[in-house]
Amino acid sequence: MDADSPTIPKSTLASVLFILFLRLVAVSCFWFGLQYWAMLVGYSLVGAGRFDLLSLPWKVASTCLAVVFPVAALGLWLIVSWGPVIWVLAAGGQIIMYGLLPETFGANRLIILLHILVAVLYCIFRVILWQEKRRRRQQVSVDLP
Image (cartoon, rainbow, N blue to C red):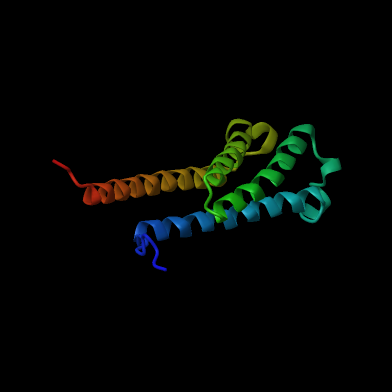
């Protein structure tokens, strides 16, 4: 039995690069999550970052990010729509921590810069993919009399 639509649209270079980009961000999110878990259980920072030794703001922030970053990594790796949304929550949390509350969490401009760079690259990819989709629709559309 033949399929109704035997042709499958080919992936473009932009879509392949976008998937690679999302997977790289997913790996970095997983790494961030592992770092927070290592800190909370006392494996890193010579045990100084254990949960019971942290101040209340650090307890709240580190436990939330220890959960949110691996979830964002899963969503980004699977290329589902909620992956970037969860990443925005995690990145926003770190930007607030290190950008708006440096007296509590310390200043980390590199993390802020990297999150902004990832967000800009994501927006650029989405615009390029939108243009490709629009161009493809225009090529396929047929004007009937």
